[in-house]
Image 1 (tube, helix red, strand yellow):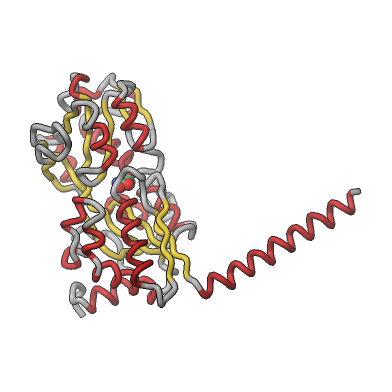
Image 2 (spheres, rainbow, N blue to C red; image 1 turned 45 degrees about the horizontal axis):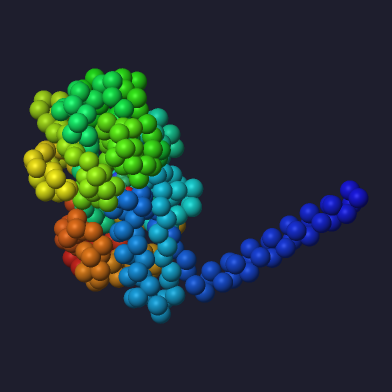
Length: 325
Ligand code: GLU
């Protein structure tokens, strides 16, 4: 009996090895490439989806298949690169720098195989509050029910930094780490008063809330905001104009970071080059995917880039004279 099960386990193991090898043989012909994106209701996911469609239509001869994968977002994506579980990632430029340089408590081992491809578009730290919550400033968040970003998000990193400038910690309110869609649902049905989202203005998660309840986007301004700008070089002050969401009547001023695309260092340079070239020669396709992608251009590919470039990306950016020889 015992012998039989050992034989069974061994043959199962052999079968697994055999399947794995066959899988690898197929992968050699066809290159499967993954992009770690973020929230399905965010903007990384539509971006990665657009890149995947561009690759499908333009890299047929190279047999490259790109798939977009949803995730908690920036911190999770840097970790997926570190463990070799994804090839490309979209993430915030601040988190990318923390990962590459090994910021204590966040990335205890520096993620040195995280290399830059291109800077894409700004992401605003948007503190969305229900209008009927009585929250009018960051200070008013104390004692409220607040979503502080999904686990593995850059949003949670930003929420902590912003709040600490106001001497508020997650212990000063009922902090929830929820998926972006869930945070939106909870605000709509009144289970939450506010939620942090570091995401492109106009993202589906926030639009979804604004179509159901009246919202405000909190200002992040004044001396405490200045303190944040001085302390964190990636932060810039940026407006969220009235009309950005259904029923949003007033302009607000908040802080933004940049979304960047990164690649795993071990990834073949030719492959990275081909994907970069396909992306930038088909920008129209990308611009269709989200209103905020209108601003993406190859000329801005190095704005706010916090990582050394992947050689494949560098080759492309030299070819278009964005990186000078
Ligand atoms: N910037 C977000 C984060 O890392 C993700 C936004 C998105 O998925 O578009 O928290």
